[in-house]
Length: 141
Image (cartoon, rainbow, N blue to C red; front, top):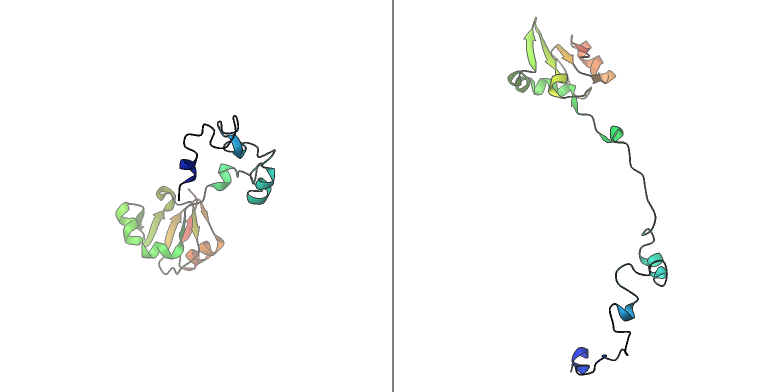
């Protein structure tokens, strides 16, 4: 069977008349042309949120997340902290400076058996409670 295009070979207008075949002729324009006019029903059916602004932009101050560390990680990663120079043994206690390490807040998940003196900008009440029960303390830089 002959293709539709081949059928019209030799015919100057390919069955469209003189003007309607020019440019984006018979299909109502190119791209998003007519979305507020003759293609409006298709917008309502297939993309109802196409026009307008949606949602809001949160302030960058709110978006940035705090870097946290749990109390249980202090014992697990103690050797690593000592090698990096963030933890030092003094007077039978381990002094850890989390502020220099870039940690913003100390959280209270995990167990603590050794006394730690921790320097950190913020700490949860549970973390403070656990460290003081083990004989340590929490200080701000």
